[in-house]
Length: 170
Image (cartoon, rainbow, N blue to C red; front, side, top):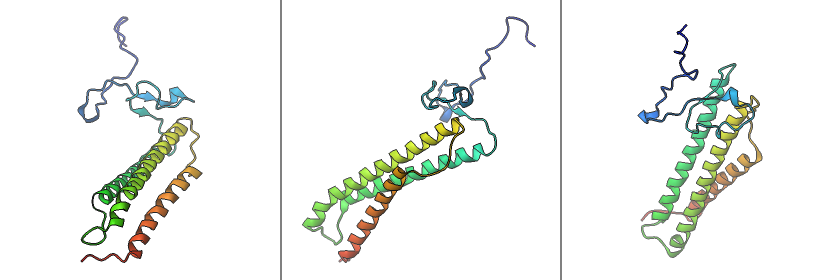
């Protein structure tokens, strides 16, 4: 036991340095903030500390992997939208119709990629907040199903468009 007057700060020493960046954010103990959104608790850039009981670590990792899947799909769709806008033509020289379709088709893919990214981030935050209240149930809602259905239908429609035009390179 240290002599009186030499007591150290009760907070744990912060050794967390993501990528060597000198952030001095203390970890946020989620159990202390029951009922609040843990993303709005200061420090904002502090790591979230959850109690690892039952299968919590596995559930958090699964939630992060799901968000990263949404992020990957969003990046792929952004790349496709850029490719469509830059060089959308089915033959060696683009027709007037292909030139007129390129920009709107690219914009639609880009908007769908933003919707996918927003959906993934929203699901991630909602699930982490529910984990902090120990009330998370893994399920999909109508928003997730409708956005992903629209994305799937749009991708299928563009593939049918390509097949229907009987595209061949000359």
